[in-house]
Image (cartoon, rainbow, N blue to C red; front, side, top):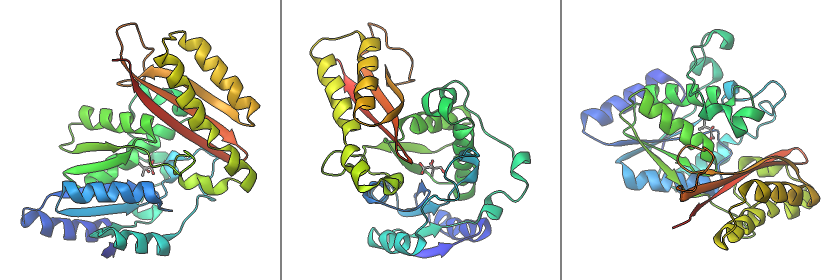
Length: 283
Ligand code: PAF
């Protein structure tokens, strides 16, 4: 595996692959890689001749009081893991390489509507930061295909919308969430949990599955189900942010004709903000 830190070096390698007619996949990450990320790389391996993984903790997607400085960084470990899943190229740019001009003056990409809901409502500017950096990474690496996790379901929809609106010739693949044996979604932020919080954390996924069960038994009073779930999470020790039963395609309020749904949850447990979701089909 080769590691490059500049856009010029990345483009040099990519140009050679392109000349050879090779298909290129990109897996954008913020590092501190876990099994969920490695699954994305394995998937990318099956979709392309060459796999690029980027590791970049993107300051633009963190709010002022969020964990940008504390976000876990583990480049040496990450490199070893990426070699283990046959990554061809690791792109690890500095902040100055990605944002050479003052951040306040940086051109931004916004996917309005979708970006204003849920995680976007509680984390102002978050999805503008995500869309901007993903757009830049796409332009830097010019992949044919890019792979993202479905754990960040809203992010995946924002990226798909951006790709469609800006006519990127890039296939976007979403991959199912990888979970611990007790159901907790793998996340770089799980490391913030104390032992006690870690033992409570799987309650989010249990709650999502319980709501699916109630809907499958015929309940359609979604607002009440959401309210009950929020109060259950609170009594389990969480500080819930949102819990919502939505249309999977665009996160709109589901009507009687909608059968493809997603249930989205976000809640604080101590310092960690955990998010999770589950899809369900009413057919
Ligand atoms: O999901 C992430 O790790 C990040 O939001 C992404 C897509 C790499 C953009 O910084």
